[in-house]
Image 1 (cartoon, helix red, strand yellow):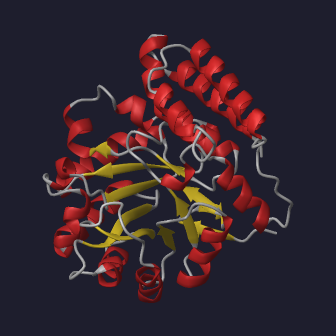
Image 2: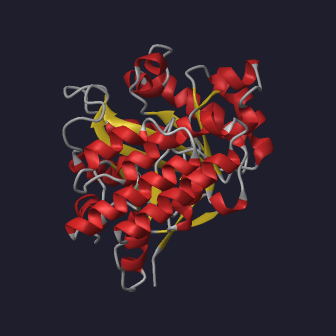
Length: 333
């Protein structure tokens, strides 16, 4: 039987969760990953100031459907008063938890003092967390963070303890520094140190791409839950593999044909959820189509063609051609 953990009043299987990823983990992506066993999901980043000043995209980013649950809404911002106002707005969408982004490394977020910039100011980060916790009431608040700003400022353990003291119900640690962005390797010793520093659940993130790396994350860090980001690109099956292991069930990897079927299902979901015409919605689907083709003979050429897709019919034809090529090479598994 799979172990569970609790964050506030929600129970989550100790398998693997889907990481929040701006521009990637939209509703279609979350639904696909939940279908294959992701333990929980989180929205794309939502700007606190953005939703306080304008609700143009609020419903699109914050609406939660039942199949996506347990699901949190992730806010970013560096001003406690705006974060508090934003929480009042997102609570209308009934999130299972609210996540504060203190890990995003991109300049346009860091430049506002938000994301991983908050790791340079523990007092401000604590004030932001306390304001969100106060506004959230009974809804648990989590914090997504990094190891630190740079290699000479690995402050994750004390930072996590400060977030716990400010009322956070859990912390998620991507064990790279801001300066690393997504390069190099995640340092699991940092997650282990955070686990020793706090009593609240610790979610470990970084370099989990399959069952073996997930088990390594659990074994080396003692974390309460593993989180998968880029390792799920074109690979929702990773959650099925991990969930099967912890349930004591057999797992059979998908064939290329099955992957192409799931790719097309994913594209259909993107199209059905989009308010845009097919041609423009297909722009959103292109990168996903390319990711499903990774790792096979001739995939580089096919991935390039994915970025030219304008219709679902073209995606179908490309998937059939790709499958035929793998069949001719004897690489269907």
